[in-house]
Length: 492
Image (cartoon, rainbow, N blue to C red; front, top):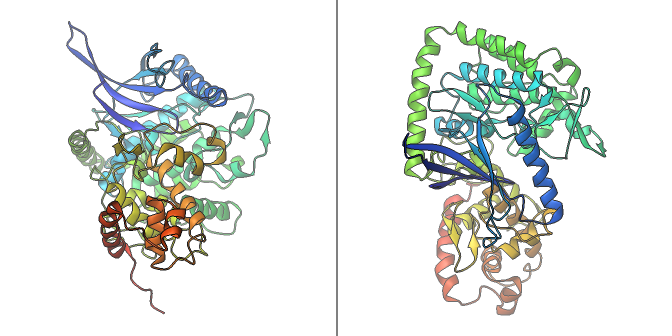
């Protein structure tokens, strides 16, 4: 293994090189799933994910599905964190579509060809009776030759008649509105292939325009907007710049109900995507050349930052890497300064954390951003074993455990802690202790951040910020970031 590439909710991916001795070196990506290291309940969940993923790879082969080269199991009792882990050896990609989108700040060059290839891979899955279940840009990989691969089949499931069943969950921006209304049954929540068609529409809109089809600062707000559209209480307003063919393509994918979406199969959409791409003629060919240049730039930047493949959403990209900067996104200006150095990929997570308790004025998104700046400089891969602190928010594992969702509190989390795990619990911590410190003298934000670095009891006992060397060094950095991120007063 040469370097860590990405971490998700249930796996970590590393780049690797095999010394063949004859043919030289073979590069691959190693996906570690800790199937032997957690509690029985979590072990069962991870085993199910692994079985699903391997079942797809064993039964299906297509140029637009990522190829599994082999599977391994770690046998190393001396390393309990690794012992028993399943390792899936995959083709090594240049980057994910999410990473490339973040780098361009808009749509992808030659998005038409990419969408057609996504449809081709999806058609292979659907014709074999499968639902992908988690189609989104971070699970679409761009290869060195410019082709596309669908990846991450941990939520893929085989149809039982017209339905399949999955555990509750999913990435809100890509889940069709009817999914939230489905009842929970013994096998999980019912899911159909039309759920993939909805996710395809959302993804196509992103690849073509760089924007999601529904407006909202947070994923929850965007899901609410999608629900209003599905209920007929709002119109579908797509971003500007789409050709009539692509606008019609996305509108059909985002039909507000399952029955209407049934008219449009992945194969029929593939033909439409190919035709829409052909209509652009020479412009598409110029776009393909531009795309190769973009991929080369992405690959070079990722190599410089120590990453050659990133199977993550933009919200998980490391600061300083491709896509950490870009034009300000509308709607966030009321929460913090969008012309500051807050990485755009963390905007939604920061807003989510900073708006959890509107009744506590000190808890704001710009406070959360300032703490992240002071803690790690927005470094999602921070690791400080001496202090036992990890990730963008410098959580100690046993403290983070308390603020995770209830279903995840059975076991102390093991680093690395990705931003989507690290940032939202900050809001729960701050909201818990803001009322406790309300009557403590001094600046409420200083007191709250001092409690973050020490404890609320320590701050109360000191009657304000304790006089400690670490805080004397920390607070000026925090205050500088706070002043830089505080949004200007809104006109009355």
